[in-house]
Structures are given as structure tokens and as C-alpha cells.
Length: 161
Image (cartoon, rainbow, N blue to C red):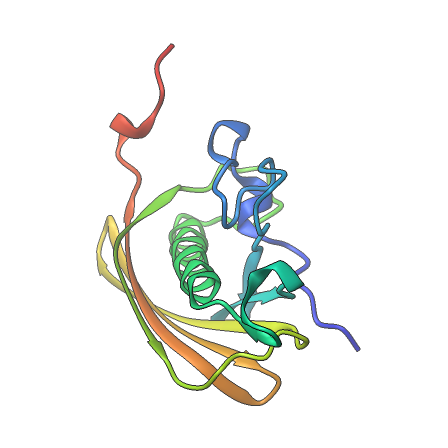
């Protein structure tokens, strides 16, 4: 049975913030990563395409870093949204995060023909700053481990016309 995220935080982002190459639902060329709850942890499921190869049969490390990055910011958004009394799908606009730091360790080569599962553990370190530790699996194989420190997006990121 194929795993998937039913209620993703990225589906709740307003159109102005839905353009990220990694997780923006409105970016036609992007990856469309979707992050949701799995108990107290977060999960993103992603199937890399052939064009995401480093070598034939293996996923490019930049895609893995992008997955960890967007999973981290999405997880932080989920956590603060829940702390504020909301869940994806309840109509409330979630907070939007940006990456303050990203660390990625590659554990094993990542095969291309297997859906990837990013699993996040969240820790609040400040009211506007969250740390998310993520492990990315291909089947039962741990392929990458990463850490994102995410901060609430500053208002200066809003484009004024």
C-alpha cells in the first residue's frame, strides 16, 4: 500500500507563499513536497524522478537536501500551527517559516526507484525559532539525516508592489 500525506501544511499556505521550488503547490516545475503529522512526528513522502539522478539509479544529493529543508520548515509550521490551536484543514492560515540553518549528513546512497520518507522530530527553541531533526528513508534504509533551524518568516519577505 502506498503511503501518502492526506493533510499537508503546504496545502494551507496562501498563494503568495506557495511558490517554493521544493514545497510550493503553485510552482509547476517544483518538487511539491507535502508535510503532515504522523502522531507526534512529521512525515513527507516523495518519489524522485529520473531527472533527479546523481548517477543512474541514485538520487542527487541536492534533492535530498531540498527535501530535508522543506520538510523542516513545513514541520516547524505544523508545530507552531498546532501550538496556536490549529490543524491543517481547519481554515486557519498557518505560520510561514524560512530556513536559518541547514545541516545534512548522507548516510547511504539513495536509490531512485523507491519512494522516500522523511520523518521529523520537532523541538521548540524559541517562540519564533524551531529545530527539526529529519531522517530520510528509502524503504528501511536510512539514507540521510539532517537538521533545520527554522524561523518565522519576517514581514520583510513580503513583496510590496
